[in-house]
Image 1: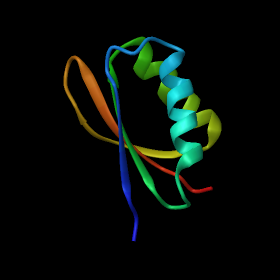
Image 2: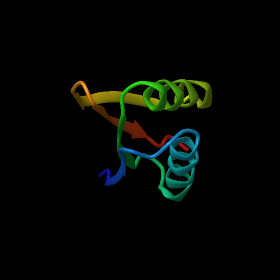
Image 3: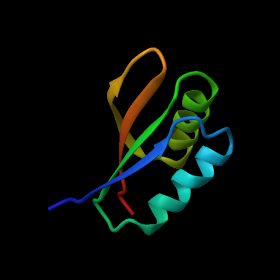
Length: 76
């Protein structure tokens, strides 16, 4: 069974949001999920690109013009 953790990073500037996500992922157990909310634009681009570089599996679960919500699986 997987557990869900939530991180609200709306209004958090780059690259601080990337750092906070990395730290949160390090605290998760294998197969736990992290739900992250962040602003559209540069924060969205930086975080998603960084997650791709790290080889993380993630999906968008919600979004609107102002923010996006993603679910990241911790496979480590």
